[in-house]
Structures are given as C-alpha cells and as structure tokens.
Amino acid sequence: MNKLDKRLLRLVPLVGVVVGLVLAPSGCGQTGPGRYVLSGTVTYEGKPVPVGEIHLAPDTSKGNSGPGTIALIKDGQYRTQPNRGIVGGPYIVTILGFDGVPVGDSEAGSELFPPYRVEVEFPKQSTVYNFEVPSARAQKP
Amino acid sequence: MLILPFIEQTALHDQFDFKAQFTSTSNVPGSATNHALFQQANPNYQCPSDINARSNNNNICYFGVQGGGDTPNCYTQAQRVFFINGVLFHNSEITFRDITDGSSNVFAIGETKYCLTKGGRSDGIVAGWASAAKLDAHGTPLVLAAAMLQINSYPYHGGQADTLDWSTRLFGSFHPGGCQFLVADGAVRFVSDTIDLATYRQLAVRNDALPTGGFAQ
Image (cartoon, rainbow over all chains, first blue to last red; front, side, top):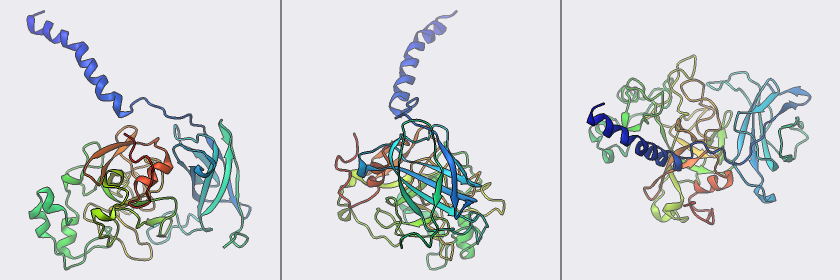
C-alpha cells in the first residue's frame, strides 16, 4: 500500500460523517407519524363507482392534524398507497366519482355526482371502511 | 416565458411571438413560431432528478403556485382546478404588497413531476414548459398547480400516466420524501411530503394570515 492509499483510507470515516450530515436534514429514513392502511369499497346508487378518488384530510376543526392522503377508486375498490396511509382520528373525506368513459381529453370521464364530503372518525389501526355515496338528488344543494 | 430575460434566456424570449396564439397542449397548437418553440426542451426548467427531464423532451419541473385549500375557485373536467388565492395564477398581477402573510411565509413556485409528457398518454398529447392555459370545455392551467392534495400523493408521474386531470392539484418530485418550493422572498425550502396538510395549504395562500407560526424553521 503506498502513501497516497493510506491517506485516502484515513479519509473514509470523514466521508461517512459528511454523507451523514448531508442526509440527516433531508429527512431520509424518517417515517413521520404512524400511518395505517385504509381500504374498502365505494358505491353510488347501489353500484360500484368505476373510477374515482378519495381525498383524506385530518379534520383540524376536531383537533386532528397530520398529512393528508388520497386513495384511487377502481371498479368500486380503493386502498391507500404503501406508506401513505391515514393517521387515524377525525377526518374530512371528499369522494369524487367518474363514469370512466373518456370525454374530450379526460380519461376519467364525467362526474357521477358533485364532490361528496363526509366526516368520519377512523380508528388508529388498519381499517376497512365502505362508503355509500347518497344519490345526488337526495344531497343538500 | 416572461421571466426568460431574467434567467439569461433573452434570445429565446425574443423568438416568441407574443401577439400570436400560444400552444396549450400539443393537440391545441398555437402559431407555427410559438409551437416550434413549445416543442423544444428548455434545460433551465428541468430538474436533473426528473427521469422525464431529457434534452429531447419539453417537460417542466416547476409550476407556479396558484393557491391552496380544499376547494378550488372553479374546475372543469375531473378536477382540473383553478385557484386565485396564491401568488401566480391566470391574469394575476400580484405584487409584494399583496402578499400580506409576508413573503417569507408564502410559496411562489413548487416542484412537480406531474407535467404531462412523452409516455403519459397513448395518443401522445403532451404539455410543456411553454404551455399556455387550455381554454375549452376541458380547460386547465398547465404550468400552475395548487396546494390542494398532499405532496407526492398521486403515485404516477407525467411520463407514465395521463396527469392532465391531476397536475393542477398537487406538487411533487423525484427527490426522496418531498419537494422543493421557492418561497416568495427568494428562499428555496425542501418541504416534506408528511407535512401537516392544513399548514401546507395555508403556506400557499398569500393573504389568509395563516399559518399563525409562519414557516416552520
């Protein structure tokens, strides 16, 4: 081993420290608050919603906080994405449903109902929850 | 486009015909001159971490922040949303004195991986860095987004899925764990995708006097 190699070897721990310093503030490896899987079905007028979205926002008016998340609805089924679950507690849930028949340049298609908002309290564990969107005619204007 | 002279791209700025129509998406082309420029890549608007940021691709990795909240001012088809409570929105003339929350507490520009680009749609329609708003029955902002949904919460990027119905509603990047925002005072902040949603939305609104603590230090 020549002199230069030895000097390089001495730098190894320093490199480790530098890499650690760079990574630490960037949040690598942080998992944040506990996240739980939420899954289930979404129906509208008794039928599965073909394409849609569920927006899940912690309800701050009831003291909840944390990151929001979304779940995609496909053929009436939904499931939060890996590592992007809910934190549990009171939530404001907004459901969008589309007919899945492309219109213009939109692949999701036309709205089945106006965005449907409902307040739900979820347990702090992985949960199955089935949503039934009431008929648009029955919803308050 | 109007900021090109301020990022040493005056020559490119001067090639555009500002009296002619601009391209919105590639299927709604503007004038021949403007459409040809729309199709060119602009490396200044591309983040090296974005796998769609290639020298032969016209995508953009930075969108103006048109506002934030859970309900847009209006929307078309499948939630292509328009907000007007941010710093940059269509026909906005927001100046520093309008940012009453303080320029250190309001987002101006954020990173996105949701610009519809090559590979996103089977019919080949793309948006790009020089896109103007699309103004038809399926209209949408194309270089603006709102802090409406959590950062990175839509799992697909604009090179693998049709993001036209998504790109106006959230920000995101290929950086692990969040994305960068340019704050109105000129600072660049990395914002975690686990940020409290309510706080995040408030940071995109210029005049709501929230969040009360300002930007978390």
